[in-house]
Image (tube, rainbow, N blue to C red; front, side, top):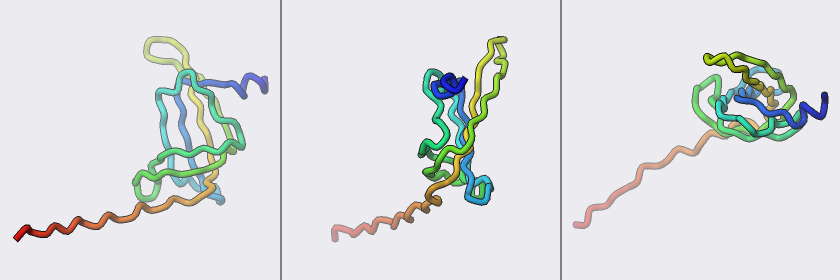
Length: 108
């Protein structure tokens, strides 16, 4: 069974990033995950997530601590597997630098 989980694939992937206290920092959803392997526990994962507090999108890096699989039934009756990863943030979100407006000079 362990070998099956190492090569597991899923129809969709939900990624939940948590801080070191277990609070949800952000999440991401990947609906088109067919044919791709699901990251293993202790793998590093980096993706753009929606931060829970500000709703802004930021890229986070974290380590997978848990994997959960759920069999669901589609509208057409076919079954599919969704995976949920719980990822502990390795680096806190970095705020994007604020762009300075360009100063334009007249040609006079």
